[in-house]
Amino acid sequence: MASSSGNSSKTQSSGSEEDLQILMDQRKNKRKQSNRESARRSRMRKQNHLEDLTNQVSKLTKDNGEILTNINITTQHYLNVEAENSILRAQMGELNQRLQSLNDILNFIKTNTGHLSVVNYLCLGESEKTRKEKVSIVLVVDLLN
Image 1 (spheres, rainbow, N blue to C red):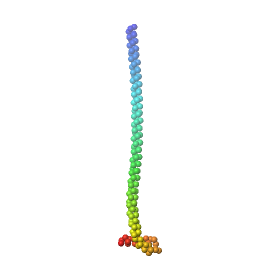
Image 2: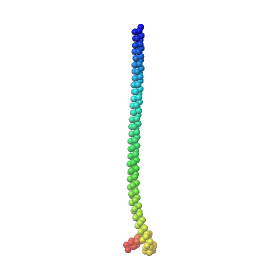
Image 3: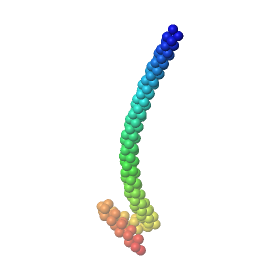
Image 4: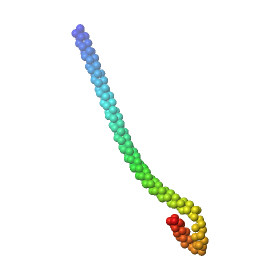
């Protein structure tokens, strides 16, 4: 019986080893499955992150295009305003010269009112146009003297 008890203990130990091996295989398979799931989730996160980055690149490219368009429009508007300002400055210079000429004429008239009074008196009854022409002639003659 001693040999049968030794056999039985061998069978028990071999059954335990088999159970242990089965348990280790189950754990190994469970770990493999868990690793596969983890890798799958990691690939999904990576794919989602890549899609997010791709979308972000598209949005930023679109935004950049809009900004460049706005810059071009603003630059064109600036150039138009600058050209208009140049024209206005030139017109202002011309108007200042005219004003100065008119002021010179007024000063001349103030100093020579005696001549103009005579001209106006002599032009009574003539049209306004004729009177202005004669006054202009007298002014020019006085300027030349």
